[in-house]
Image (cartoon, rainbow, N blue to C red; front, side, top):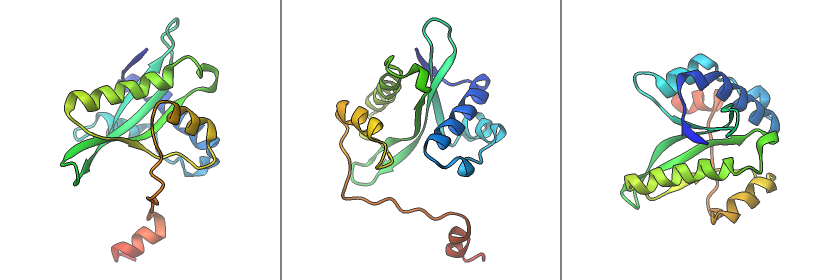
Length: 159
């Protein structure tokens, strides 16, 4: 049901990224190409890792998780930051999302990582309910900030 992604999975992962972006109302922001994903996941210096969920009967890829290592100065060890978790709507309810999270939690425990973290949009109550049912708790005291595009260039002193 869950396995590490392979280069052959890139087209499916790319399609899922676009589906997720469309669901989140931000399709125009999903600019990653299949080539960029291949380099990020399987290049000489991978920036991220991916697992896929497959249909038990057909073997078709029906979901994915993309993640990367972060580091906690307070704990002194790595953790996993889950960038994306997505299961096609037609496959939801079959345990694939939970199985993807379980696989990442297992990696954390096996490697001595002490955190598995991710962000969720405030309006995405189905996802919030799913995460909280697993025991995850929101970190309400933190606000995410982001620099992109012109603001990033300005902050870098290059514009």
